[in-house]
Image 1 (tube, each protein chain N blue to C red):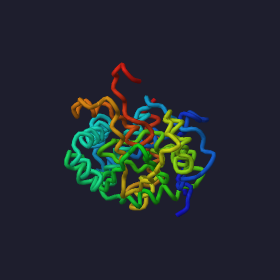
Image 2: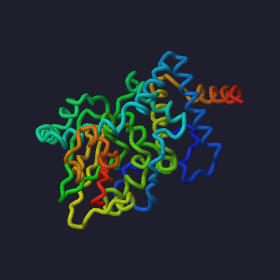
Image 3: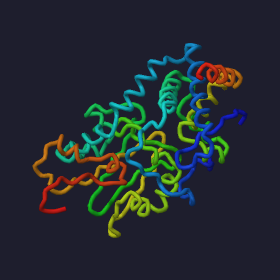
Image 4: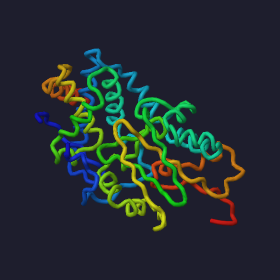
Length: 215
Length: 103
């Protein structure tokens, strides 16, 4: 390759601070050139960034999960055809065109990764966290899922089977976590509040409501 | 292609950097890069397979050393140069100009 990129480094190993300002400058240069040539609308960039930073995120997926917990018929539709069932709640669009929902049960725990890249269900979870896109998680999730989950503070019992799903450019996975205990009387909004992003990737579990009697 | 991007099963990549407070975009240039990618994609500069293919052809050391949105920049540049929308010289000249004006 002929381009002379200088390299920005992730926080954990930046050897050269000049590189970080250089990449920023290079992106600015590319943007200003494309705008000048009429190929790009800078206001449209602002809009997209705002949408993915503030509007589209795991609260969408949490609504899907809470609805599935509350409505067995919906849950069945969700497991049968994830894309259509998720679209019922209005969540559609790029990087969510073909959705498969995998259900956690007392005997099966599902984990999602994209070993090749960073494929992730944008309409339901927003943009992926940085660790999802980085080499350590991508390399290890498929050979040592239990070790990886431990790093996230999640101990899955040895008797529980772990299934790891490798996403790709066309097909994205969403984990349907198990409904936590002590949630019988909760409405969907309250249930959605218990669902975390990590629980829908499979590296965490939903919050359990404080009930005092049990931890 | 069994390139460097095919990370599944590789050893020695280190611990996972789990920081729940980490923002989606860690710098403003990442925001701009994200938006440019979507618009360039929507504008037909590349399709999603081309976009990934360019990243997968990065030199292995460069791939591992550079950050996520740098991969995106690399691919965007690759296709914009291929279709004549950008040249290296233009980018270099503009960077020089911007760095003077930015001070």
